Length: 104
Length: 170
Image 1 (tube, rainbow over the protein chains, first blue to last red):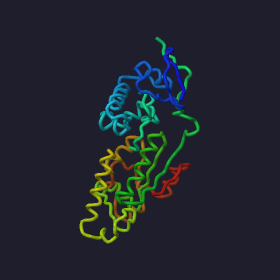
Image 2: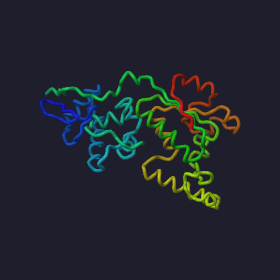
Image 3: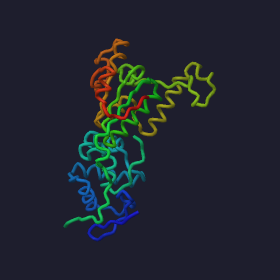
Image 4: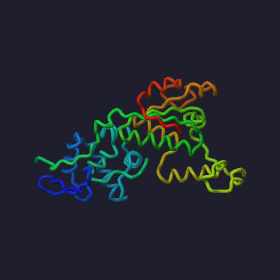
């Protein structure tokens, strides 16, 4: 467990850098996390991030790619374009959520 | 306002170490229970940014044959892992019952049926290949196969395409 700071505000993260307390997240932090992994957020990115945040609040776990596509209405292909290579983990990271546990 | 994170602890999403990793999965079974391992692993690999190729051969052809892909079956016969008396599996209707039970358990986990799963794999950048010998044996052409199958190719072509890949035979 480590602590990072965003403009002086302390934020708890695990050894990889994922937030351990999703309630410490806000949209400014989301932007900074995205920049840290080389992604500039557009409205389409925000759609995915907001779905993840809302779904996590309701379900208590991070949505898998499939769930973001079937429930969130964002096609899988689009998610790979927005968050290249490892979309599920990158989305979770930027959204301040744990990595998804589901296999599919 | 500048948003600076310090110290920068960032997951190694694009580490050099795993760059260029490739996975080849040979799907040789046509039963519902044996179709899923390959699909799930392919989907997982793609989600990790791994270039993934699936080769459908022998009974695995049923997974991409338009006539059968939506209707794969699961049987208790010869499958001791069901922990049911083997004689039961031979009774009329048991395969249909076992199949619908398995399909339900899979759907309950929000895991798609085979055709939709293949669609998701292709949308994630996966490559589907059909085995030439299996096509010839069954007198099937590309028209009989799921549209997203890229081509019917020989075993040696598949080996060539997947040079350097990690290989899984299912």
